[in-house]
Image (cartoon, rainbow, N blue to C red; front, side, top):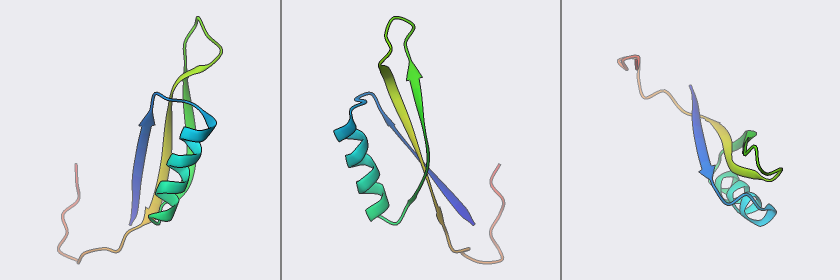
Length: 67
């Protein structure tokens, strides 16, 4: 089963993004993608969303599907 993690940051600097990437990869997550939120009045991103995935073991055959 694939598990997803989304990390949101409003501080979009190279140091902040590097720290987030390193922190979650150390915890066993695999970096999937990054999405930036732009403001019309600025070329610099206002926010960033970093997406991570990892394989998660199934707990058992009696698990119910989540809605």
